[in-house]
Image (cartoon, rainbow, N blue to C red; front, top):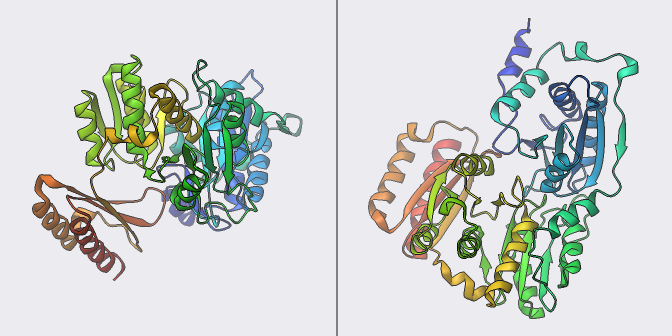
Length: 460
């Protein structure tokens, strides 16, 4: 039976919308917790009559070494082999887990967060992120007081090994996502690798497809991942595209599962516009399954307008690629994604992959024979303002009268000319206030007004 303190810990939820995440070397991102997560994952996926194995990869954060060793120790202690692939994008781990017929895959990464943070994401044997019930089972095991009693005998311990050709295997997989009849020869591309997991494989893939590649932010030191670069800060990329007269630029986030695109004029295109461009291309080619696109509540109103004009159906989900994927699988959709640049092409991969998204955007340019700025006209972006408010508490937002009143007032004034969305982040102690409206000035004013109320009521 659990003691009181242990029961309190058990009530805590480890998994958010995208795995487990937190400040490195502080709960829950400690070596001790990683050890138990490795143990629990190994125990959960271990099967009789089978030599079990788990793929373990990471991004370039300094804390990745600590967490990697702890995870591997926990996995081996449960009689499961750990295969370390080193630095590789999150979707690369999903691919290897499936292609190697591993029992699970674990990624050590905090995506677009600063280097001080880290996280753990887990894939099942099919290369898909774990469903809620599997995550709950891991949490149950992690907080159980008898986990150590489930250890096998000394002769049944697992082994740890390194896969030396992991990046090469993943690169071959990525190149298959680009049409065989096309080439990127003569195409000038600038890549911002955010000092993250894509810093080797992305330049290799585009160069091998014939592109003339200029690479930015490809010298990770463990502390510079996402620092003033990558998908969160594509400004330097935009400047370089214009300076070098490149045809397109791609900015990846730290773990490579999302991308922000820059056209030849230096304009920054978000995920919604790329979603519209790719969906249109897929419909022309008869590849848009069920004539459907899955998007989230954070999608710009302009995406809905564009899809309607293209006679393409769409459905809306909560924010988070797992919810997008669930809806895609349930409805038989081939494409879905988020405005953040996290797009899923189920015909190519089981999860969002920034490099695959970039390849699809490049393919659209080649097939249409038009610059990206022309293709982007398919969607008009409504002015959107997003303010992130760090919060100390997370009460139900609708239960805070002042916040509810501020939202209602803005919605009443906007009418059908815009919308308001206020929600908590699934991975950080943060409340996101997003407003779309007819003009930048009006939209900014409404957003700031609501954010001020959120700040006052949740931090006052």
